[in-house]
Image (cartoon, rainbow, N blue to C red):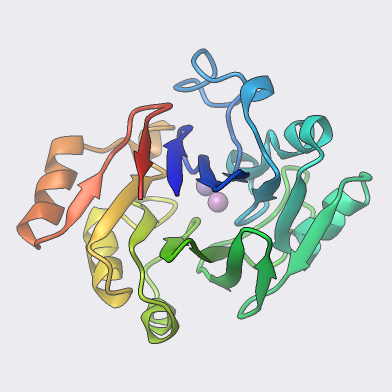
Length: 226
Ligand code: NI
Ligand code: MN
């Protein structure tokens, strides 16, 4: 499993020959748009955690070009299905065995509306189990006790957690989240993109390190192998 960071909450996950793309927000991200071209991104599946523009902006264009299947909650899936795109609707607590592995749509505490105000269902995160590796993509969320449910079913190898504060958990709550999900290996996301969520990288990494945890802050386009 290869995970590549495209800024904010956008990640590519390569599992075998299958390319997943999480929350593509490239053309609207000043930190990314000169480095990453959405026409170069591969996608067989596009997983959307919620409807906010900083998670869905480039989903339609990429799905049209690649024919990728959009996986999200029922309301978001219906939104894209009505545009003629291929979708797989899910809802909270539900799992599905895709060709690349199993995906569960799990709870997040946040809001979810499209840029025009249209209802985007309740926001969520994804637990992805594949190739004997299990990862949790939290999406935008507060720290929530529901995170404690995840390790009851799935032993995680890696978690992608928001750490930017203001709109989501900050670093200190993400450290507690890491305890709740019983996973000490964390990739941070949802930081630095806007003024409200700028963070001190070294301070964040030190706080995780002091709790015996590993916080990775990837450069734009940087990948890790799991
Ligand atoms: Ni959001
Ligand atoms: Mn967001």
